[in-house]
Length: 353
Ligand SMILES: *Cc1c(COP(=O)(O)O)cnc(C)c1O
Image (cartoon, rainbow, N blue to C red):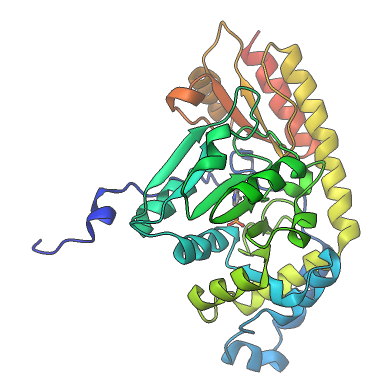
């Protein structure tokens, strides 16, 4: 016991992921995963890979710069390949940018409430954080335009609120900040618009995308970043050399290629999102329109979030309850399949009877 870790590591708490229940009858709508199957091409590509004829692909290190995926993403988004950086999940994109930008004297800034991984990455890097509450209507807070942060992060659409700010407003933020602006678009697949077009006018932005939410590949771990050539170069310096395994590269490439499958699943989730929103409102929950694949709902006055959470858990329906002061009366519910949502609705009707 004579050793110590770095002081910031000794002091920090780690990230707490959503509970991962298992079992055949479980409805898991607590981590914003996609309830639809990945594209058929994903299974085909993985089956093709898992063949002794491809032994070399397992023996050798995977493509360092994710060539096949970058080609497909470059074409889809009309962004040059050298401006695309891939990560072992979108979370690794966050790690790369925090490594590039932040240290003891170079703070990170972001509006709250938001994704709780940001302060944890700051703790690891031992950089100060500037947390600024969102405006009442979840617009970008004024003070965020005026910090001395080396890295400003805006999650848009935001988690866990599901709210959205327009690219026009984000362009103003990009012009105002002194450092890099990271726009976390993990949920952009379900939103009315995104910030891709800002790449043409802003050289200090990085846009994060994830294959976990819109493309049903949370288990494969693949995310990517669309950014300026200069930021891409810096990220390449700090990334692990072979950061994404060959199976994840093959799967993500096949998934991104099948835009038809993606759009059909997205439309299905958006339809179900409207359905669950309406029913929750009828049951007395308060919630704003979501721009994501989840809802953040304030529970009816006569109930508590903890109680509803527990009763749903007893019925094998797992949603997210944060139990923090600002979210104490709220529940976050990911949009499931038609069938899962029906079971959720029936369970809530019974609980609130
Ligand atoms: C899911 C998510 C990510 C990235 O998730 P990965 O599974 O690592 O791709 C990033 N930001 C937010 C806000 C998310 O919800």
